[in-house]
Image 1 (tube, one colour):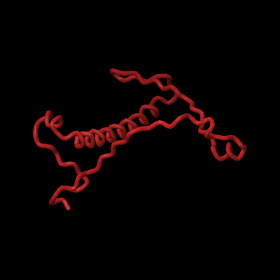
Image 2 (cartoon, one colour; image 1 turned 60 degrees about the horizontal axis):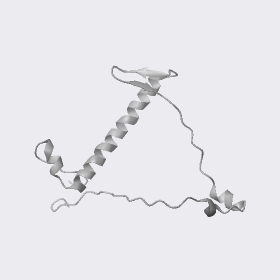
Image 3 (cartoon, helix red, strand yellow; image 1 turned 135 degrees about the vertical axis):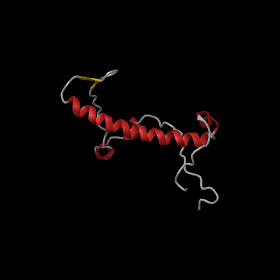
Length: 109
């Protein structure tokens, strides 16, 4: 069963009784599945909207807006031009990343 999460026997509350690392991995798997579904549905909605300003379902209305973001600066070109990029750089931000991986259980090898 390597690479798969073992189903937990019990009722819906059993999820709350699982180890936090196991719950984190399960939530991430479901989140990925829902994000893929969201992208698929968004493509359908945009296709059906064509140039309309809004598109309505029975319970919700979709409205599309656009945002523009400026592109990143080309550090190599700035350095070639004699500009000290580091002088203008914002301070570093530290983030903590938690990665999960499937535990190999005895008998699964």
